[in-house]
Length: 299
Image 1 (cartoon, rainbow, N blue to C red):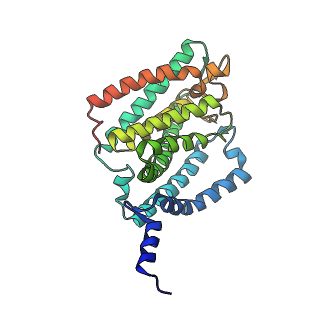
Image 2: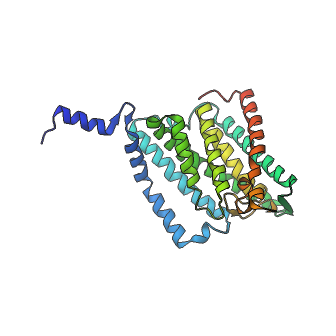
């Protein structure tokens, strides 16, 4: 059966919009490409639950993160090619001074998390029990956790602030898409052991920050650096839980003290109601430094 010109036009309208393939079909292609990763993760969580609970080993985390980054980057690249887009620039991985943005983001994340830890310590809600590592293991664990959390930053930023943000923004606009992506990002942390409502809200707020950094610079690299440093400082440097998980091989031994709403409890510093003021103070300094360094110019 031959289609009339009107039928062809209607069919084209179903699949194509003013900006190419409609966002819904793009998301379906991306989700299809992600099916193998979802299956692998489901099998691991079902048959090897110890990989995701208790004190998480760095070697295991490194392998899992590397596999996840591979699938997400490949799915993003393939979907972008199908859409006929310049993959790396469209999804925020290209642009000028990526290393400078990565390092600036890392510094900002480290400073902001350290300010939060400092406030909790000064208020008596976080206790330092001493050094957990000595000698060469400090360097070894520090480097492997650095690599792990850089991969975490790449994985989560490319998927949420990269592919999903860019695709949803085609139909919704930037900020409605950013709010939706941030809610989805927060919801993805709900299964983490020990998470709380305060912790999830904090995750969503930081997700909006990463969207803001993307909007300001046109690049994911600031967000990747900030994200990686925030997680690394909690998990390795200060030895606190990170989104409800505790990692093996941390520099300091610490424990929360007092009501979980104030100390963060099982979530870590980001689960405390006290995290917002020092975080905002750190961001003000961070934004001032970014402006001085000329990194607010969209790439």
